[in-house]
Length: 387
Image (cartoon, rainbow, N blue to C red):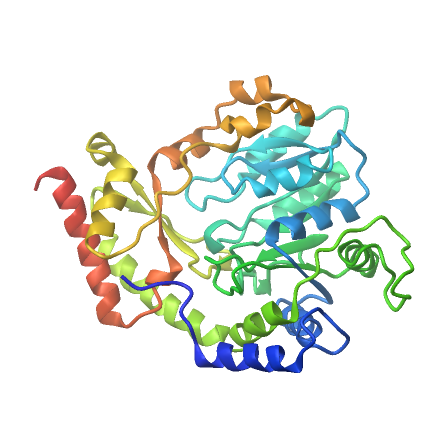
């Protein structure tokens, strides 16, 4: 079994350079600013702010929109909890929508229904998630959002290098965020990035992440109530090295993803989810869903256990929708927890029950390894079924 992230001499060289320069917090012209410029350019954005995590990137994006407390925002119920909690801590109220089962991204038809029912126009923000590197249908999301008078923040935490209709995701909406947490395709253990094409939003986000300072202002002059969400030079150096060779790794992942599909697409016991036709995924995950027979034999947990014992990794995936998370019962946040408990979003429930993820870090080796992975998965399924 391999590991992720994999130590690389180029990353190490960049890290040592930052370490030896002896200025480890962001400074003008340093690694953080260089990373911001190159990451923005790579993702077709005008502005970028490097921060401490994908979660704080979401929080800063929401904060910069100046939404009053109790404002509602829409997020899929099939996503990491930070998509919701980053708004909750600012006093916002999440409204959960279903996903398209094939792409596992926001169901734009259900989104349209939810917005249509919002007669009081209390929903002011929509957060599509580019889950597993699959781009959400941004044209439809933006059309619905603008018609409703709502902002759009793209949760691109898993979508490094992903394209929607030929354009990189992350700056198609008002803002977009990325994560550099340990499992991500670019990582420094932690870290995040906010992208935008709006200078007004960029200026606010930069100020909020930098203790409320003004761009070009004095160190002890604060124009806003901000916080410290700055990325370090050491983190930025490692991520910058990975960004500069990212396309090479991505090409290998895409070649190996094709092998996975070729080897497994005719297996009658699993469904391999296909990326959407309107964009290019990065295969952060290849989602697979188990049939009823496998669910009856131990389901996701059992298959993950067998694969792990054989030296390969497959992730169980989310086990419950966000609206069933006990965290939202906490009184201090004043959330409609009882309403959440009554929700039943069919595709989300099905995905939580059936869907597992083949992670990108099993797609970074040679062809022989990928073929062995696919055959091991097939054999593990047979073992579960007693065949």
